[in-house]
Amino acid sequence: MIEVKCPSCGTTISVQGKKTGLWWGIGCLVAALTLPVIVAVIGLLAAIAIPAFVKARDTAQENTYINNTRIAADPSIVYADVMNMLSTGKQKEAEEMLTVLVNTFPEDQPLAFVQAVCSRSRWAKSRAAWQFQRVMELNPSTVEGKCARYMLDLDARKMVEDNMNGLRTLIQQNPNNPLLLWLMGMECQDNFKLTGKKTYAKEGERCYRALLEQWDVGPVLLHQTYANILAEQLDLYEEALEHRRIAVKLEPAAWNYQGLANTLSAMKRYDEANAAYQKLINLDSTSARYWQNWAHSRSYAGDYEDCIEKCKQSAKADPTYVGAYRTWAWALHQQGELEEALDMYQMVIDMSPNDFTMYKNAISILKKLGRDDEAAKLVEERNKLPGW
Image (cartoon, rainbow, N blue to C red; front, side):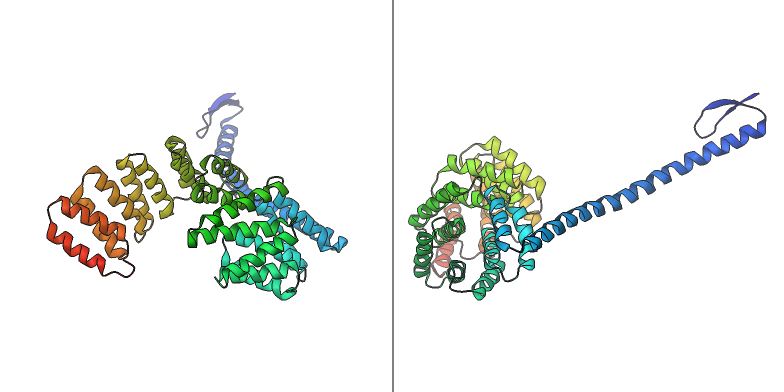
């Protein structure tokens, strides 16, 4: 008996004869070399097989659902399922199912209508337009057909008040149809943005309150848009925050965290806002607007150094995004870096000639620096702009 030490793994064993020991060492070495290859192959096969299995499982579930609906042969049953998904906060799942169902039941107007409503709730106006057009073509005399016509005209800004009144009448005639209330809330928000009339914001608030009484939880975009009205149009931040948190829980996407962070910032809860902005950036660091929103918040908090750093990230994400330089210039101005701020204001004016606020700030700096002739020249330039 002799002791042999494996050159690859270092293990020592007793064997009979040198030849046996030699072959044992070679076998151990081969195993050591081939094992990582085998593990890698198994990992590769798993990487391919598992997603394929998940996709096959999802497809099977989808096909099962379709087969069940075909057995039922009644689109009203699946329509009720979709409405229940929306009521319980499963908007994304409802939209995915609608893609299948609208193709399965191409002549069913209620299914086509709820799909158009969901698209419109996500502000996909172009997609919603052709979907509403299809709804109207299926039957223009139904509640869905009439509402589709009103929505097409409203989004095209045609006879706005007449079409708003038409939608109001439909709601009065069909008070238990939550989709009509949802659409009215969307249009009220749009009309406030375009006109600044508080009456639209208050009407939108009433629509969403009534809508929440009809649904258990409600779709994510209901909470998101309702929070926009409460925070941005009515200054009801505490109530808006409640719906921001619900929206983030239902669908934790970047755009939801943006709303949450902006509302927290407006409430001067800057530490919480920072945490929300960080989650937002973790989800999407390529958006210049998201970085600029964070910069704006840091400016309000008085942290101008951090504000400028966020502005730099915004400009890096999109060098043409004017908002980054506007906030950057303001931060420099507040730090007393007047020459640098003036250069930045001038750059913004060159990029966006009708930005009267930038003219005002640049003129203010020029006067403070005693450069009255340049200030007068800039005033003259501003006064020639259309809309001044």
